[in-house]
Length: 319
Image (tube, rainbow, N blue to C red; front, side):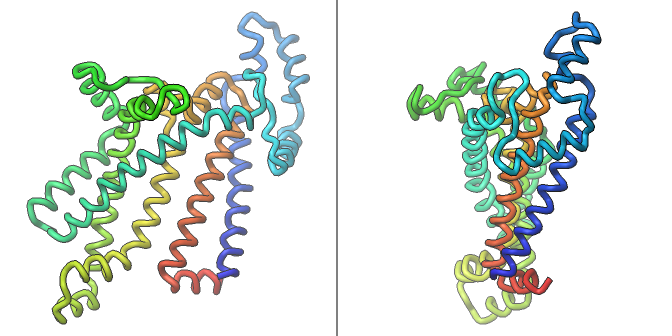
């Protein structure tokens, strides 16, 4: 197990290093200039060049990258050009709403998808399976912003029972008000994610149900509940756990659209605002931070995958 973990940690470090190169490179080749954005359209070229020199943007990109990575390893992601605060402080202010939004959305997706996926697998080819599969296909094909707009129209405009934008903390508005502001964005994201989890759950259960040892268990007269939850679920769990980890990571990485739509002050909105202003340090720090969380989630999934199926752990240690 120790060798397995070491191999995974080496993979994490290598992945982060490669990601840092892409993040830094893509940030600096995007159109626009931070100095121009700070000084405005009326600034002349001399003023812009002077500010670029002061900000260190005229230095070779390799030198800028080395300095950025060296500081990032020590926990210093630099200072925002526009926010008059460090990138770390800006991230600390915005990560809370994004994590809360992603957590509740994932919980909604799991509560809906796994039971429905099991039902669809048990009743393959029946009306219940067709209805569930069709719903899942619709959810996978519908853009999140379109579903969000429909929910806003129904529950916010027509019925007027839920707020359509904004974010209220528990400390400021209480638990009930906090939940009311989260319902629409969390349901939107949860329904979209549940479609993928449902299809994977159904597919995983069907794969296990068609194996020889399950057919043997049925021939021996074991009860369906015992077969389903003791044997099938255990063997299908590794695939389900994997998709759950990837789902949560994609939720955290893809909240920008919904945070902007519902006016939630989270990481996604911070990144969008920083891209528009060409705030390089915030863009780089935020994307690197989200990538780190995504990698950690996948590391946890890989470790749990090895615990669920020892064959994977042995194979990983042998490499």
